[in-house]
Length: 137
Image (cartoon, rainbow, N blue to C red):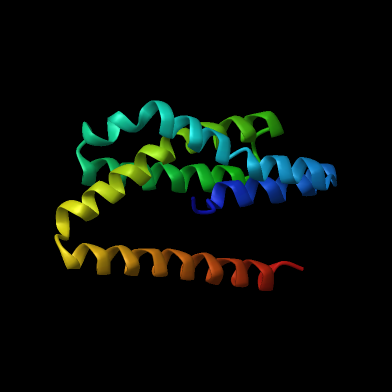
């Protein structure tokens, strides 16, 4: 599972608000349990939704969630609820993205495409961590 921006934003805000590394860590981990539960209960939706429209809409919603969390306008329980809800739906988005990739690329192209997808995703996470670490005081 990939690290989501929402989880990082919540973890940073929890640490800033409380000064507790434990709460910051729990806020970060809070995004993974809903992904696992969403994967067990909601994955049948991945085959039923129109892939491209769902992914475009979901990425737009994730952007709004990230901005909302980063702005700090919600109380801590509201942020945690938002991360949990986003995590549950993110499992469906990951399955939909994988299914769309398999539809678009066939045979050996799928293997290469999946590898490029994983490389770019991991590379952007590392780049994001570097930029975030560099920009923090």
